[in-house]
Image (cartoon, rainbow, N blue to C red; front, side, top):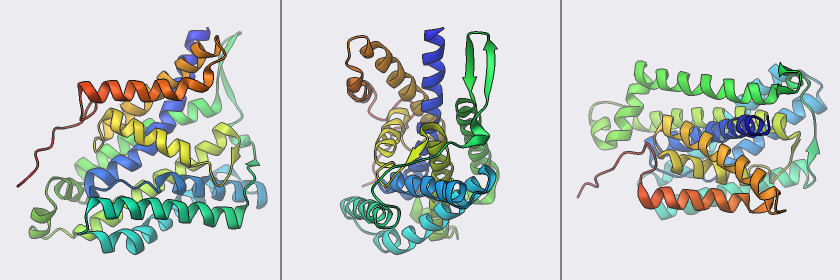
Length: 296
């Protein structure tokens, strides 16, 4: 059962990476920018979840709703203040700004929440599905997988069958042409940030549920891993983000399992990035990424 257990753990971990990667890939696919502050928005979502559950004593349903609202508002405010003025700026200016926003949010969390990690167990996720007498799937694993799949399907349907979604597709293909057609490009980009940040709120809730602790630095590594998953699957592609996250999670869990036999489990991250480099050497756009032709 160890193989099956490791596989399911990898899919669960990969589902969380996929959920975070969806936020990255939507913003990049439509706004053509890499929001490196996304990991810190997840951290804020996790802290909001902790405050609602541990401090205010409310239930998980209220906590996830508050986390989504807080992160959505935060994402829209950050986009309006930090990114909108740089709409015509070069990619380097946007990248530096995103890193600055990331450190700003991290320091705000340090000042208000403290540097110590806070622990909490979400009771609503403390259940299991007994497959056999010797094997069961934990509630956090089930919720991670189911919620990520539902969100990916909902996002795909939203983009394909709603007016706002089709506007997003138009902006992602050609921003100038979309504007000439009467599409409010700034509004579409703001909605994109709102959706990506709402997903970060869900991810923050799941992070606390999965690991049982949250702190000011909690968003850094999941953010980097999820960005890797987005690139792995093909940044800008929603199915690519899902696939990249799942594959990344499985690789990480199996590499940890194998390397732990040699007391080298800490090197599992290196294996993940080596595989990423190998994939990008073979297919630079990622597994499901599209080749983009630059206009001159």
